[in-house]
Length: 262
Image 1 (cartoon, rainbow, N blue to C red):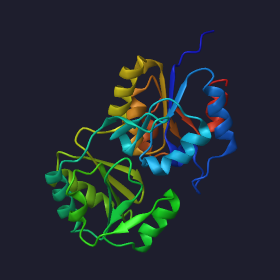
Image 2 (image 1 turned 90 degrees about the horizontal axis):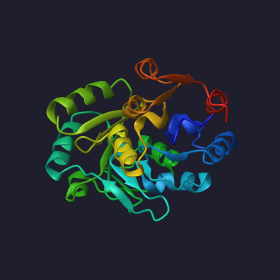
Image 3 (image 1 turned 30 degrees about the horizontal axis):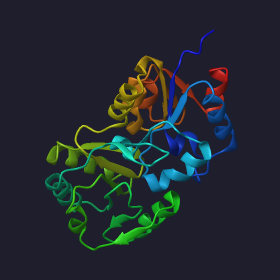
Image 4 (image 1 turned 90 degrees about the vertical axis):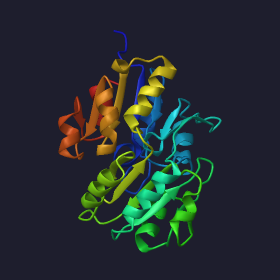
């Protein structure tokens, strides 16, 4: 029987990666076997610098979705094929809203620049840097970092604080996209950006209908691509909102391999 899928798209954190951000050998072997039958790529909120080690270990050659959909790159040349930015005036509005909350915002400026920009390297930022393997630069006033339109903001905070921040951002800066990527993270993206929109763009570029796509993720920022794909897969630990809207729920990547008979 003909294999029914042409493209597989995997989230990284909470999906392919272990809690310590390592890539299990089981996942490596599955994706390598899968790549013999279909195109395989990643869709992550991470930057290029943070994603690069996984692209190389997995041997990914299909265009890859970064920054939660703000960028699609060619993983071989590392050239952006698609990119959106937050206009400076909207970025300044975001910073004004964020100032009213006890959180730690980060600015991502360009694809080529591995440095994230922060007002101060506080302990929550240090924890994030260790997880992602990224360097940070302190600038004091983050308004200096958005003189050129940034790619995204990632805001670290306590889970109890972030829902109010989300609501404030959506109310006061409705033009931007706001997503939750982990319990302690809120991300602010350019207008109209999501993993789903980036996946639709990628499908068009590759000539692959969404009905022949499998998308796998575990958080609300994965929901748009899970719903777009012909087979949307949620990890068992995903929020209920994600699980109820997925076509398939799996506990591990190994379980997905067995369910697809790979």
